Image 1 (cartoon, rainbow, N blue to C red):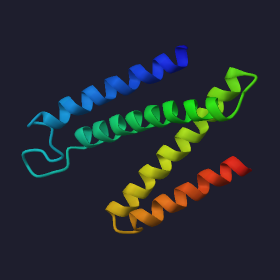
Image 2 (tube, rainbow, N blue to C red):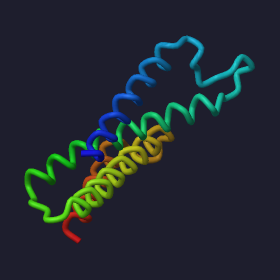
Image 3 (cartoon, one colour):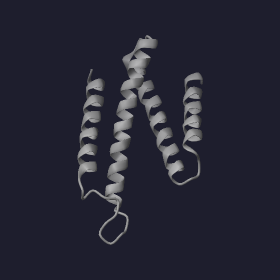
Image 4 (tube, one colour):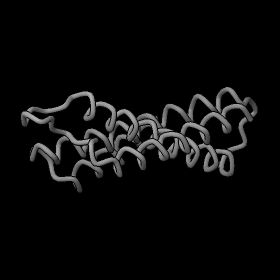
Length: 122
């Protein structure tokens, strides 16, 4: 129960902070001189990663709970966190590679899905 509560609270908090920051006119990726404002960029990336990780964790937790009957909740939580972190990092890397025009977003997501399926099999 603590696991679900902490995931839900982190998801709600990150969504609220993202909504506030994205509607704030001073939260820009550039400062007044035209340089990158790395604090704002890293804040946005961190909040997006927390939001995605907690959302995927909740989704995968309920999927694994409905399909597999785990004897131990610790194994369920560990496998949930493992799959959610791999899926979140795969989606994040595919987005970053698409942003820099290295890899198309469709190929990046397809590779992430293949890696996730291989983790289920192996």
